[in-house]
Amino acid sequence: MKAIVYTEYGTPDVLRLKEVVKPAPKENEVLVKVHATSVNAADWHLLTADIFMVRLNMGLLKPKNTILGSDIAGRVEAVGRDVKQFKPGDAVFGDVFGHNFGGFAEYVAAAESDLALKPANLSFDEAAAVPLAAKTALQGLRDLGHIQSGQKVLINGASGGVGTFAVQVAKYYGAEVTAVCSTRNLDMARRLGANHVIDYTKEDFTQNGQPYDLIFAVNGYHPISAYRRALTPKGIYVMVGGTITQLFQALLLGPLMSKKDGQQLGALTLKPNPKDLPLLKELLETGKVVPVIDKRYTFSEVPDALRYFGEGHARGKVGITVSVDSPA
Ligand SMILES: NC(=O)c1ccc[n+]([C@@H]2O[C@H](COP(=O)([O-])OP(=O)(O)OC[C@H]3O[C@@H](n4cnc5c(N)ncnc54)[C@H](OP(=O)(O)O)[C@@H]3O)[C@@H](O)[C@H]2O)c1
Image 1 (tube, rainbow, N blue to C red):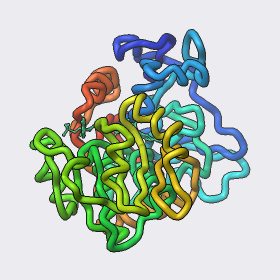
Image 2: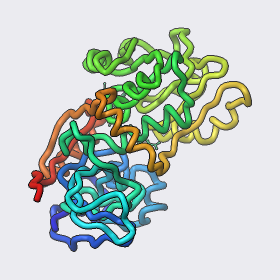
Image 3: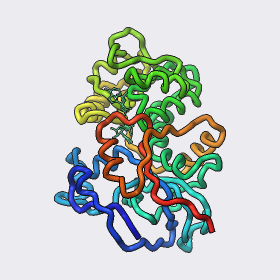
């Protein structure tokens, strides 16, 4: 099969389209013929090793796993003997983030628990834009943020892959949502359901005296003390992405600044939860959540897709069409 392979850390220039061995599914795995995939920050970090932790976990000098790509949508080609939920021909979507990646390929072996049936109303391209970013939004708001109906929730970095889902998921939970993004994305944030928008190029929300019950920080930098100032007395700050400084502040200072029965400040680590994709499927099928896709690339253009993502201003997700569906 064909795959986009990298054997050294670096820029998207190190990615090569190559012929590699097609994976065989283990007992609990599903072999998926990939029709579409999409780019996530995780792909960027694993490609560039811009965070030192990447080298510690994924190979000090060169990557142990040579195929990036987490989000996938496609058709089941074959199943391992313990797989119960899927059969060949099923249209599925999911992410292989916790399963050594490998989505930038014509076929990938995914754990059964990492997949769900594709939402009926979505194309493969649309479905592949969802899993990792939407699960991040869901887990950050629901599990770490303990989001409640009627709360004032602020999404900092509302216009990227995770942010566009976060606005919609927060609305689903009944929150009053403030979306922070740049001027050109304000209208999109309103269309996604944001009750209020703040243009970060003109206003610093940490200085406006408006406290929030929950701050979901996906992009952009503010010191943790500024986030704390913008929280209500029992408000929660969930650090999802941003600068390394922001991550270390959330990991090291967050627990020290958190108070029992008071403000809570911490960082999200995405965890496998087999219940997330079925819930997202329902939200997508009922139109409560809609994927936003900025640009789509062909399979051989994966390096260009990553270059565009790496500029840091994608509006929603960056998609990749791997192959056109031809059901048996
Ligand atoms: N903790 C976890 O488990 C986890 C899981 C997934 C992702 N993440 C992290 O989440 C982060 C976001 O991922 P993503 O896929 O959403 O990235 P993304 O799609 O690349 O985000 C791009 C968006 O960031 C916005 N942005 C850039 N600078 C900004 C600023 N100063 N203030 C506000 N918005 C700004 C851009 O909006 P404008 O063009 O309007 O500037 C653009 O729409 C990454 O750092 C990633 O590592 C963490």
